[in-house]
Amino acid sequence: MRYLVVASCGALPACREVEPDRAPVSRAEELRQRGAELVRGAPAPAPDPVMLSDEPLTTAEREDVRALAAALLATDPVERALTDVDEAVERDLPVLAAERLRGSALVASRQQVAQVEAIEVASDLGRALQRQGLAALRQRDAALEAYAGALERGIVEDLVLADALRDQRRAVDALVEARAACVAAQRRIDASAEGE
Image (cartoon, rainbow, N blue to C red; front, top):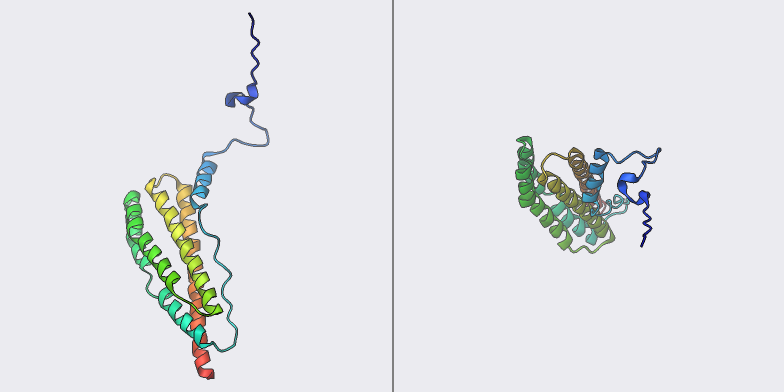
């Protein structure tokens, strides 16, 4: 009895030809893709900055601005915690840095998100400021999580670490914008008080 075996060489990885116009994936691209996977779960970008009108603020708007300003403009506990993380990174202790990041900075970040979420706002301005602040805080939280993940693997995957640091910097920029909107709203409180 004879058997006829038909095999397709194209199905085997070793038999495939590299397409002339498509180079094989480099190690750097592989690392970049893994870095992208880390931050894929990050929240959507921060909403557009809050625009204030020249109209005097209502009582509800003033109360909302004051409550949100107290939470968003207070001394940032995450920034204090990141000082210890940076110190460990500078000493080439990435795993220790990740532990400090998870043990203090991420805890403080999540507490800050919960604090801003708990503020009950009563005005459209308050809701817009709260939405912008929360988006920035959540973006920073996701960036810190990605940074901790990159540090836990050690500083061997430069592109993953660079991507995590870039995302963290973008999150800080979004938080600065949210704080600036809150400060601008506070100035409107002063202007509203003068107009009464």
